Amino acid sequence: MHLDLPDISMGDAGSLFVLTPEHVTDCYVAWLNSPEINQYLESRFATHTVESTRAFVASVLVSPNNLFLGIRSRQLGRHVGNIKLGPIDSHHETGDIGILIGDKAAWGKGIATAAIEVVCGIAATQLKLRKLTAGCYASNVGSQKAFEKAGFLIEGMRPAQFLLDGRAEDLVLMGRILK
Image 1: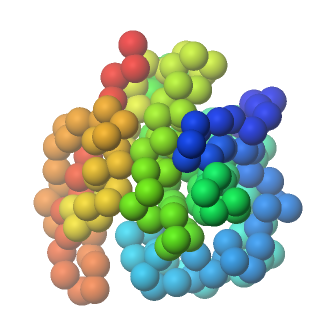
Image 2: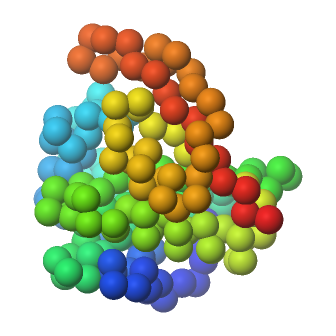
Image 3: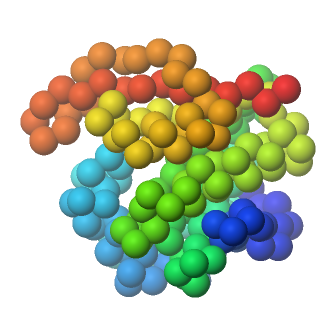
C-alpha cells in the first residue's frame, strides 16, 4: 500500500517515511542478520542480503494491504528501524503492527512508542481502521512496554508458541481499539 505521505513527524523522537528499496543499506541488512537485534523476529531464520531485502521492501510497497514505513531518529539523525501496518483487513477494519528498532543506539529512547502512536493515527484517520493488533515474545519486555505506552492492552497469551534458543516461549497478544 502506498499512501502519498511526506515525512510524518513523531515530535521530538523523529519522523516516519515511506520505505523504498533505495533505503535498504548494508547497515539495515546488518540489523536483520544480527542475532542480538533479530532474536525476536521470525526473519532471523534466513540470511539476508541487500538484494533480498530490497526485493522484500519492493513487494510490500506494492501490496494493497500493507504499509511499510522507515523510522528516522531526530536525535541520531538517521534511519533506525521500521514499522509495518499489515496485513490490513478492510472487511473487519483491522490491522496488525510489527516494529523493529534495529539501531541499538535508539533502544530505550521512546522511538518505538512514538512510531506506534503515529501509525495508530494514520490507521484511524486515513485508513479508517477500528482496531489494531500486535504480538511479541513474552521475554521481549521492551516491545511490550512500547505497545502498552501507545495504548495497547494485553488481550491474551499463546503459551509455548515459539522456540527461542531451544526453549518454549509464550506469545503476548495485544490490541488497541481506535474507534
